Image (cartoon, rainbow over all chains, first blue to last red; front, top):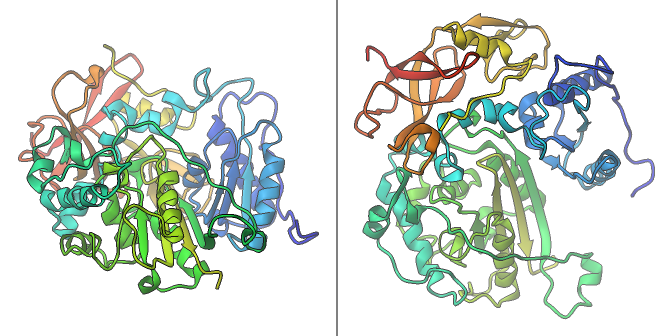
Length: 382
Length: 134
């Protein structure tokens, strides 16, 4: 911690205290936040970092109308907010954001909107009230909802969606650890079992078991370790909404755009500098959104970019070279595996190695377009 | 199996009371005039606590959807639409499109739709949308 480098400029509690039967948990967060913003003379749009425990920072940001480049959901009990202050100080010093809002709200006595005994908003959360009753069954029928609008806007076909899975299977064939290695065709994908039209089974990620871990230290120390260091060149993050139905634009992810731009700005690189790319592919449309929202393709051009084999073996932008969530593995939170492949590529030990890869980007999604994180890796200290 | 139903909070009660009364109620900011959804007691655009409820037209168009084939016992056994409509007032909301076959041919993007309510309990009616004139 750099001493005296960060200050508290707004502080307030909820308007009422004690027993508040007419305000839900999220309402208490918002009430305290609006009072603190008033205290500081700020508006929600002046905030670019959020931190909270109990509730999700995604829910908090969307409820208040904040587009952050920093979101901390550290939840370790009653001292979470001290950790939030500490992390916020580091984030501000590191340039991840400028102004962080930390909130607490709890309907400890009245239990309004407090969810069930296992926590979470349950049926009283906004998603529980305004999405769950209409019949979604997990991500396959939720994450997929924006895509028909995207397809109509951009003239993208079901065959284009299928091609994403076909090309990634080609990569998986080179990877002994991939779950699926058999070649597939566009027709195979379109003939596979319908899950949520227009999505077939082979357009959806696997469900497997596994895990991964990373260890980080300073670049100064890194040179004393047995493995070739992989440096963090730039980072980005953002959150948009806990409700897929409330995405600002179904043709594009705001969280992807904000996170990607921040990562490129921090890294100080151009798109042509990127040798290798991982885009979290929970479903076949995600690489399309990712390529466009990260700026590798213009809006509407990602399907053509993939059809022309730019992301395939031998193409100019090798993408999801482990086979991705569609063919390699997906245990539930795949972001870890995307970064593992970036590290392998930059160490030069990937099964489908990209020759002389120096810069790799791992771009992840959280929830259903709810959140995003982007890491630019390099094997040159620069 | 009983339908999964929303559990209103004090901040959303007016919306569900409206559905029960056959009205789609939105909120708007009296400072910046923007209509917004889902309900909350302040404007998500400008942070103003000066907001009001109003009765929406209940009309809009089909913005996007999927036809879910995965089992969801409280909605029956047939594939069903999970849709997002864009209301004439601007906000979008998730819903089911009813009153037409649950097929890509019948569910045309941008087709005009209108709200219709179905009661599921003494307290909860869900807002569905149907093609205009269905």
